Length: 229
Image (cartoon, rainbow, N blue to C red; front, side, top):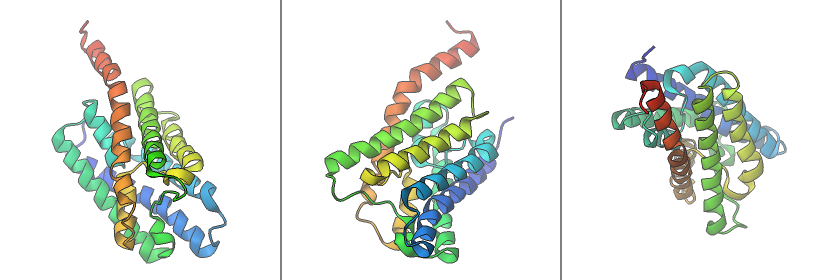
């Protein structure tokens, strides 16, 4: 079934909204209620749950990007067009901003609204590659499940799982955003902009690296379906 641009836009907006509410809201809630005692494990679990909801609810409609870096990855592999990139970007940014507004209104303004922040004990020469690595692993898992099974079965668990694991093991270095929209919205609303450059660059680099790795596989897959040798 083919879905309209409006349906894809709506799915991406709602999915990104859910992701940002869970991912940043969990951090704000932890800071407000538990004084940060739940820590990284709680911050890793929340987006895992959000992506389970998003992938299984909207995967068939929009491929469940919820992330501008993932959108660029899909563009590199030829899954979407330039015009579709614009729809996705608009939906993801609007959804993220609405998500941060929801967190500010109904949860609180602690912890800079859950804005990502790298560890100042590490240099940019370590932080940037770690964020690239986290984003590349996310994009790689997404492409793997799309290439093998499509967004069915345990795909939501795999995608949500890699986000959770990246946060659990890499957030202490780079903040492990992997998502420019998720980083942008709370940073703008809280005025915490000093590290935003990292999350507006490294995730795209990581996604593009993974996309080029899988590009040939997808081309061969499409050629096989068309009977081209």
